[in-house]
Image 1 (cartoon, one colour):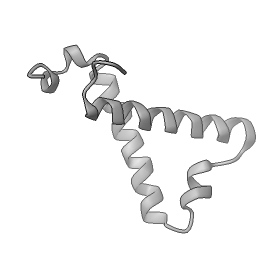
Image 2 (tube, one colour; image 1 turned 45 degrees about the vertical axis):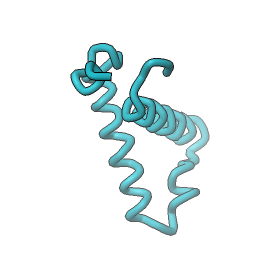
Image 3 (cartoon, rainbow, N blue to C red; image 1 turned 90 degrees about the vertical axis):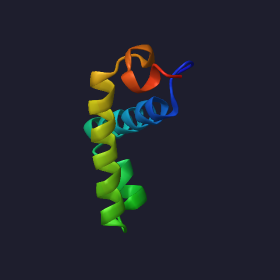
Image 4 (cartoon, rainbow, N blue to C red; image 1 turned 90 degrees about the horizontal axis):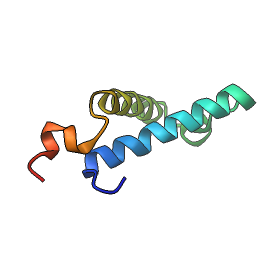
Length: 73
C-alpha cells in the first residue's frame, strides 16, 4: 500500500473486508457484517455499498501511479 493515496488505501481495506466477509459466509455461513451491524440495517447496507464501490474503484485503478487523481501527488 506504500505510495497509494488515502482513497485507494481505504478502497483496498474495504475490498479486503468484503472478501473476508464473503469467505466467512462461504465456508462457515457466518456473516460478520450482519453480526456486527445487524441492529443497524441502514449502516449495514451502507457498508455493503461502500465495499461494492471500492471494488469498482479498484477495478479501474490497479495502481495509484495510473490514477488521474493521484498524478498531482
